[in-house]
Image 1 (cartoon, rainbow, N blue to C red):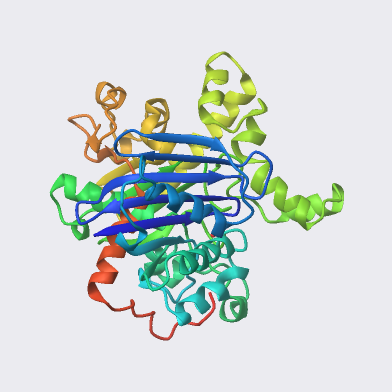
Image 2 (cartoon, rainbow, N blue to C red):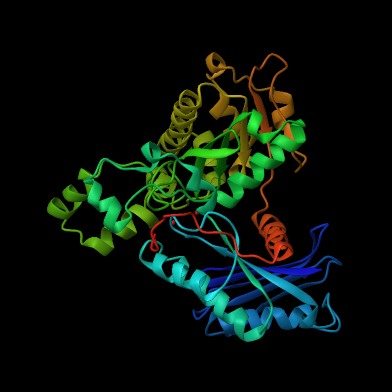
Length: 417
């Protein structure tokens, strides 16, 4: 059975075709800068064929059509016809409170996704564009929505509520939602399987560290707290996002810097984080670490602040769970930077975290343990694979032939990695 996974963004579309149930990736492709100057298409299949070319495309529907044509192209295609595709899985960022699991995309489900536009205005609209594009290109093929927020719908109310007048939650659904849920769920399940332990029997902290960063506390197999909040801006210092911030800073910026709403939005989301702190013109942590190691003091400050924020969340979530059994590092930085893992773990011996430096430095791209023999907490590097997880969850949903049941009593509209 062939399952197509779509991740549609505001100016890009990623596509991967899987053969299930073994979940082998047959081909993948991406179109970047859709509708902008410099649009490019990338495609590769499991035989090693590659396409990388400039292209002119106006919208998501055209991009998906172009990528799909390569899947069936005689020389570099991997299937004889699009009729071989049995189902399509979509990454959808926001499902509000109602969508607690992957689900068949029906008209009521599309309404929920539309209702969440106000909560995820940069993400849900292009996600919906991807769904509608696939309806046009693959009529009659079942589609499944896999929600970034779904894994975090198990947060207890005292963890997701903000200290605001309660009607703002009741009427406007202002609360912590959390994001990167598909990744946090995937790596926690993979870690437990690697340890040959039931997920429900271990307490994990999963650290998704990339350009966007988030940390989740997983207890008894459920997300009980997570660092991103009402939007992906809250929490850790990230590539260009500020993370946790005193809200009164916004008032200061409005009054004394005369910034309007859009300027503040750009400042906090696009100009802050590692980019804003390091002052080297790059938000790539590799560049910032190089600058730090060459004596650039501002870059060193950025790295120290980035690491310190991660340590604080690890300590807080260890307390929230009453202890810690496993810490997981994943995503681009978490998987690939031994230096970051070393800095995060340094000084945490008091809560049972002790790194083995030789194991930490020995990268192999696989799920592995890197703790010292005397470490009470297991330290793991687990490569994330959100597309593969979406394919597996899509297969589960279409196998059941039933849409997931929405959470009873949840409001219809709920609004982000």
